[in-house]
Image 1 (cartoon, rainbow, N blue to C red):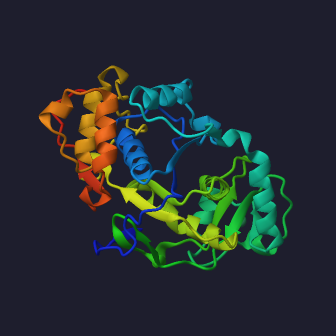
Image 2 (image 1 turned 90 degrees about the vertical axis):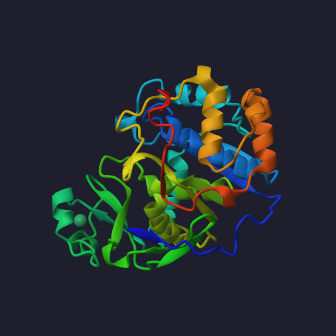
Amino acid sequence: MATALHSPSTNRLTPNKGYVGRFAPSPSGHLHFGSLVTALGSFLQAKSQNGQWLLRIEDIDPPREVAGATDSILNCLEAHHLFWDGEVIYQSDRSELYNQKIQYLASQGLTYHCRCTRKQLAIVPQNQLCDCADQNLSIANSAIRFKHHDVQKGFNDNLLGRVNFNTQHIPAQFAIKRKDQLFAYQLAVVVDDIQQGITEVARGADLIDATLFQLALYQAFDTPAPQFLHFPVVVTAPGKKLSKQNHAVPVNNLEARENLINAIEFLGLSPSIQLKKGSVADILEWAIQVWNVNAVAAKTECIDNRIGQSDSI
Ligand SMILES: [Zn+2]
């Protein structure tokens, strides 16, 4: 949906003592090398600016959760010395907040109840709401949809530069609470990022398209959007990303030093041979000192050049 134009952005790496970043994994599997890269990149971006790095577990979709994944994610971050600031936030604890925010959107006339099936929605023209919008349906067996009327054309990414959306393929509505009463990802992310005071969302480029929907919600909440920075996704071949869904091998915590070096190199830094023999703490301290987001490839995906050399991906 989105295209990134690799023009220099004017708002790159503005020193900001009030920087608040976050890492927000879902417990749908263990961390793999690609998620470690994102965690490390967002950590370095925060710590190099004396900022805070918060951890949020996005556990609002129980059917997709894998038993033990939350503990595994926390253990993995700790094994790599990616220590977060403050308490871990769990989205599963925050239903009341999400419901309040949905009520606010409803009070602004920005939502409606919808009972369409996925099939029925698929035949609604992109720029129109489904018929439910005129029917004043009760909440029973309904999804809550946000009227996406004020579509933004793009945004300035702190790595990729200007990113323009393909506005021909943007639906006129999207779900903020599903028929099964689970909160939608877009709603929960924006509510939490606002509530946690996030100043820059640094995450994988697989979430670029989500930015469009999230910007619409910031506007609806009358809140300035944070900065955005999308790191390249780790792929094994063009278009083939490492993911929990395609059973990428979990990060081996016993190889934390090697994993960090590999992730640091993927992010464009060049550790010395001597540093490669150092401790995890030494490696991270060095990376914080020399971190420069402009060294990261300004691309939405990069092939992992360790393929064939290591079994740790
Ligand atoms: Zn409908």
